[in-house]
Image (cartoon, rainbow, N blue to C red; front, side, top):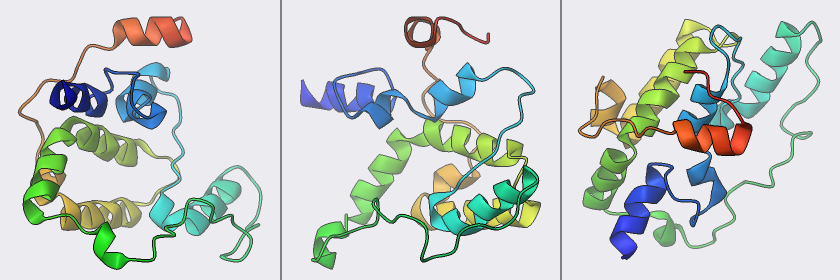
Length: 158
């Protein structure tokens, strides 16, 4: 059934949907070794984050708005097609609650972000998903992806 497949997809449990749903934040966070440094590129702040990582790694600023690819930029021409109702937005946020919690954890762990940058991203998140942005738990437990990690990476970190 379509509803069950959508639910499994947003939880990272179905490989039938887009791969970025199956290989989600939980997948990558659980696959990295404990205490491994995490560097974050936030799409909304891509140029600044990229340059900050360059500096973190001992380099210097190398890109600006003109030199970075915008191949993932929104190309829709009808702005009305981009809007979803408040009710649908709330349903989507609730369905993505666990992913949002892991996103917040990843932001906190990022070696290249200052506290003010983390706060900025959390404020941006609040504009879209206000309940989940401040929540510490979700109505649904995180799925156990141990088998998925073994099948796709050959190991787990747990």
